[in-house]
Amino acid sequence: MNSHDVTVLGYFVVVLLCVGLQLLSLRPASRVPSLTALLRRAMRGRPGRVGVITAWAWLGLHFLAR
Amino acid sequence: MTESRSAAATVRATMAVVIREPVVAIMLVWAFFDGISGNPIHALLVGGVAILLGRDIALGEPNPPVPLLERGGRLPAWWLVVALSAVFAAVVGSFPRYSWPTTAAIVAIGTGAVALAWRGPLVARPDTGRLPRPGVLAWVAVLVAGALWELQALLLQPSLTADSWQHPTISTLTDPVLSTHLGRTAIMFAWLLAGWFLLRQ
Image (cartoon, rainbow over all chains, first blue to last red):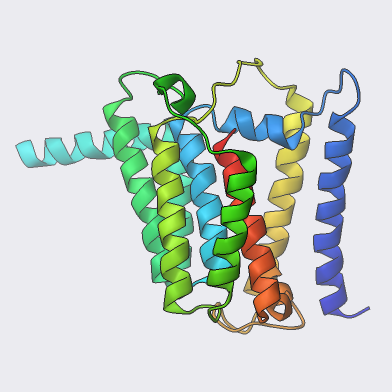
């Protein structure tokens, strides 16, 4: 396993952990909130709402634009 | 003397903003690193929004914003959003990556969405109270770990502007997909729908 594979494996583990937390949030009376609940909480005020939407806009710029 | 007092007051007000809303500080640091990585447009967008947010927080929001639907506004039907996103993605995806038409289209959509978010939420959501702390910490730990993993790959590149196959960032891994019209269209379509989903939260 070379350093490329290790790096890709790291991303894969992070994605798996996110999927695992999301699945845990679906259980009744779960102490883990869903990603949607987390986003709603973060976006309740203007700074959080504008910050999250700016992060989304930046992703579009980063991957596709100059 | 008066000038030094006013400068001190400005520094104190700025520090108060940073402590109250760390999102502004995070965005300023983010804009700085994007700027030195050779991305002036990204840095301008993030830094500009951070400065406006900082000013807004320092001045104080007079009233909580009223959701768009409660202001008499209407949201477009979901099928219309999907159809328009598909057409937009197919048209803009036909331009080469990093081209000026693509950049202009994404900047227009991005700044429009930020302006919409600035005015207030689109939909009223009931207050669900505090979220369970252990679960929130688990999410934060995983998301921060992901960001640090991406950062170590970025720092192990030959330079901030040169990709490395040995230590690929997510951008490097998505390059083969984004080099085709179909790939750009699919990613842009997903990006637009994700933006609509976020605006509705």
